[in-house]
Image 1: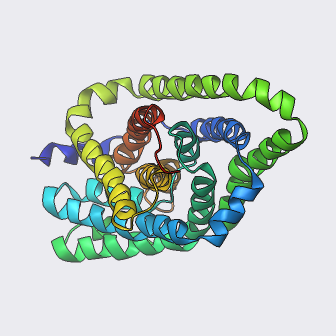
Image 2: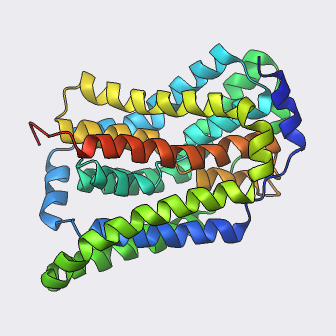
Length: 311
């Protein structure tokens, strides 16, 4: 069914490092807007009641990679696509999830906490998960082992990125909220609207830069990304519902599991010492990055109109 995907190994996507830097700046601005609604006292609540935090981390780093591996066994794509799916699943939750959780009226503080834990844990968990599940795939099918290289994450770069796009905007936003409440009240709504515009603009730009490839190969890759992303949302939702978390936390863990830091995946894929821009892997990460914005915004918008009977 997916034999045509083999041609993607010869394709190189137009995702430059500058594009990823621009996305980081965009995320930092969005995180500032999200932080305007944060209260330090609610972080203490998350620490005092860690059940949701533990389940969120488990959904991200245990359930998501497992379900991805099972999906790979079922649909049996080409090795590059399979390892691209596994790499995306091994990445931490995306920072966009904080905005989407806030938009969905979920537990924003829990979302930020899960993202922070996820980012730090990724230093170990991303290469570990990719090596384990990718190695299991290579052993199971006796293929793809030539693509399975040790994934080494630059720890200092990871910490720096987290501080710049997550830590600093959060601190500034919370300081704004605490010391400039009147200003905060005036700018919260405009920033939310502007953030939605930025999301939409990024999707358009991302598609425009790769429009020819998008038209030529979307029929081959879209179905896989759609199923994979839907499975991610359902995995997070199932974990939260099985353990009977409150609805606000169910929404949070669902979004956290479904929104992956595919930008990190692209950075690894385009690393000349790792995968050197293998087309099939890059297509999975790139189109995941486009699609999860659309699916995440759709889901969070639907939930934003649904009442929370128990917060």
